Picture (spheres, rainbow, N blue to C red):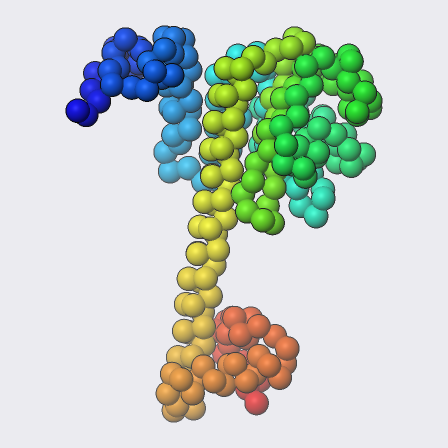
Length: 255
């Protein structure tokens, strides 16, 4: 028999008591846990969102939803260098900058090694002493870094910062993992969309260049394409670059 989900309450939150036919783990969730999941889902829905607005929403929602979190940041690794993508709160930009200068820190290690790193007590942290000292100065006493795997070439991390030691319990870790998963998917989708748009733009400009050659030399589309390919090989330039020159200026050297 299909599961039955009754409507949400007037304030938009679901109650575990309103759900039947669910696995025992979900059925046992408290009203507070369901409220957190509801906030998670709502926070990840950004109308007409681009990559940046989506990542900004993720770090803001993670800070508001994950118990103990007071700030959050998303970073990627580019050629082993930390590249901030989105931050929420005062501490992340400062600590990101320190890691960029020193090449060392929990966000870098979590991203590079693709492992979760938790600093439960910043005053007892000895793996990154400069980072720990600066974090304490900023009022960060515990931290949770979760790896982001987008593809084989794109790695990163979602980091949560807390003002209390031992701030993150199991529920907080699980919710944080959901945010990390969504961040990885959002970045991956944005990259695929960018590649698709670029491919379509390249196709259009190559089509324009072929049209110019066809009209100028009274040749077929295949012959115009062959001319561009031959020019690309002889000049050691990409076909799309030659096509852009031809479409923009009407001038290109075609052997």
